Amino acid sequence: MTATFAEVTPSTAAGPIRSVSVVSTGTTQIHPQQPFGSRIPMYAWLVGSRRWTPPRPVNAYVIEHTGGLVLFDTGQDRASVTDPDYFPEGLTGFLYDRLARFQIGPQDTLIAKLAAAGHRATGVHLAILSHLHEDHIGGIPYLPETEFIVADAEWRAMEQPLPELRGFLRRHIDRPGARFRRIGFSPTEDPALAPFTSAYDVMGDGSLVLLPTPGHTPGSMSLLVRRPDRAPLLLVGDLTYEAELLEAGRIPGVGEKAGLRRASAMVREFTELHPRLVVLPAHDPGAAERLRRSNGEGR
Ligand SMILES: [Zn+2]
Image 1: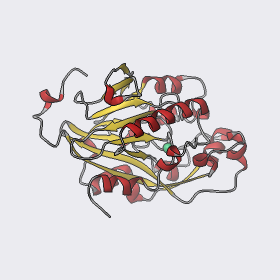
Image 2: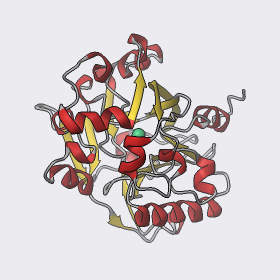
Image 3: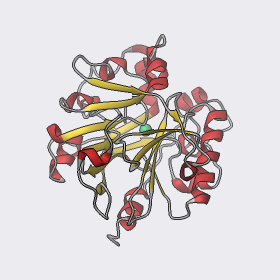
Image 4: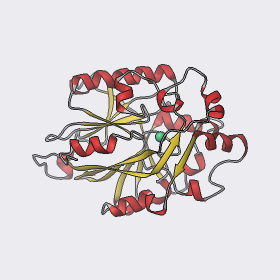
């Protein structure tokens, strides 16, 4: 990205971020071992657990930047509950069935939710994908004008053999016509980003900064949203399922544990350095309310 914000549009005291809001593409139920962690191996509880959490959101964050409309994640495709051919057959399909249950009505699609908020699908300039799991990539077929940003490490993980078995429904991601920008992180010495030492400045103006937080998947990343007049936000995807769990040092039951521990510790340290920071996971039941409060919208 070479263009700076100043070249795109004149700066204002409020900065380039006009608003940040959240929509949820229906809800999901997962086994409690997923958010809260488990001592037994994932495949054991995935197949054996009979408990499901109450419905949780499947969040996509909507950022109005003066340079265009930006999404962070795109939710779960409603076709996954209406089209019997959406998932692979056999063992892989069985595992997806065991992983999560989705409730997605006609009014819950990403496009319907964007329309209700006054946005057209064709107006979405960029969509950042925190990672490439099913409940984050669901909007890809419905955003024909959008450029998708994904970590190069995530894309390469998808390209390995048997992507479906590892949570990457490749034919719903790598679609003909979909435009992807595969990004790497550049070294940074910006003390405001410590302890992170690499970052990717999405708009070239420092308002939207991607930080590597691998662990849930090899290329999982978080988005720092900086607004001069409001609390900074950190959208963490599935690094944790509740901000309080991350704060308490609890590691989820899915993903690579050492990576999750490392990335969570870095986010915790970052939070200590920025006490106003609001951490917003994709499936945190409290995230929408915390975002509203950070926007000064009260209850
Ligand atoms: Zn997710």
